[in-house]
Length: 359
Image (cartoon, rainbow, N blue to C red; front, side):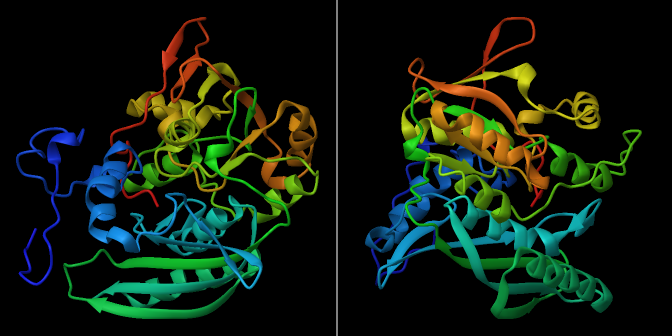
């Protein structure tokens, strides 16, 4: 890092990282640092948080909860660098809205407003930018949020990748909602809202020109309506998360470690569509590690599980909701899965990401 004689140096202890060699000898950014796995976590823990110092005044969730004049608000920001810009079932425009809307919803908030910032590469066709912008506006209307402020920057040709987008959002929390990873507890039922791995395979299919015998469409969608239906049951929802980068596996590991509880999955209960299973088999991928953009994982007390599951299945975005496991006292901080053959395997936190630039 460059040193400024007017500011104290930030010490980076690369020996504490799990990044594969030769990063500890030449610690430069690699794609895995943006994958939402262990490398992303270490980048935050060992570089950003020490650099931010006392100014870092928030948890490490996808959205922060703040109280303003007695009103609890959720605030979130996210950046989108997906490649290609348009893929089966959506584009970077829909992702930029739905990704931030969903992060707010996972805190139990009703999304209200978004900002949007475009970073455009010189030479990008105006027609391509217009297509993405129209998709973004349509997605915002569908999600019930207003685009209230924004920014545009242009970078030199060769120094971007067409279009990058950042969105930030604010939402109002539901009364009494206390939804955060630390609340997961032994006995909680783990529910996923639908078929997993769809978005990642949709992007990969067109990125590499692969064909899997059928068209796999991204599941990108705003989940605030589904969350509202779950909250209306009166259930005490402990945790909600949307399993994007790193898929269901990364999300469950983060929750297990935050709460200090074990999680036991039934691998055969995971709703993996045949097309995704076949594609993962061809590519050597595990569906649990493949990104989603329109699914959520919920941790619910046993007494509330049936009514939450019924409410989810009554909503279009939760029609295929399924119970996939539960929290246990054993192996705290660890996720394990019972396989179809009756054995058990550890579902670890990925170092980086199987499919980079997926959102």
